[in-house]
Amino acid sequence: MPAFALPARRRDRRSKAARLTRALAVAGTGAAVLALPVLGATSASAATPTSATTTTAAAKTLTTRAGNLDSWIRQSLVVMRQHRIPGSYYGIYRNIMRESSGNPSAINLWDSNARMGIPSKGLLQVIDPTFRAYHVPGTSWNIYDPVANITAACNYAAHRYGSIDNVHSAY
Picture 1 (cartoon, rainbow, N blue to C red):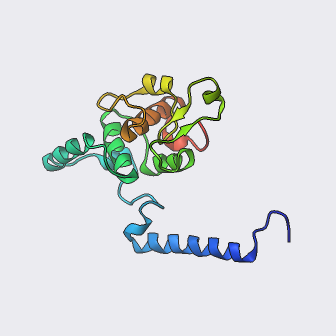
Picture 2 (cartoon, rainbow, N blue to C red):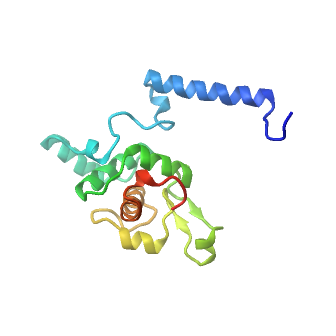
Picture 3 (cartoon, rainbow, N blue to C red):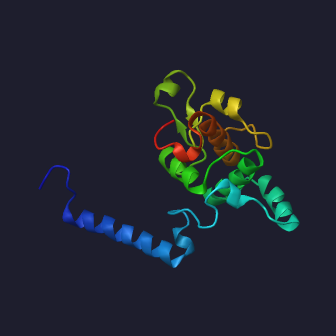
């Protein structure tokens, strides 16, 4: 067996998990929400409220930071739309999974930034100077606040790469 191959039993488990994830996504069950982006909010423009009732509801959710990854991304998309910051649900989700696995309290204490005394923090692993420079009005100044962290990181990515959707590695 080549050095890089997994034992047959492990390969089977991985492929079963992949099939299950795809099956859940196709079936549209809530169990796949964290594994795949939710349909219908694929960009900041999709999160734009369309009526007075939804505008009021959106304003209320902006002040509520409790929730889960899906709600934090959706709240960020609303703020991003208001400030014309490009980005999609999928682009944000993909980068969060790579950077912090969805942990809003994540902190990187081992990379070059950490060695210089400015560790990367939060869902999208932003350093303090970048967070302050790209902070978006209407969000918290707390770098660990999920919505503030996502929105500032997307603002930075928009200025540097055109959109968070164009970021496919550490940034």
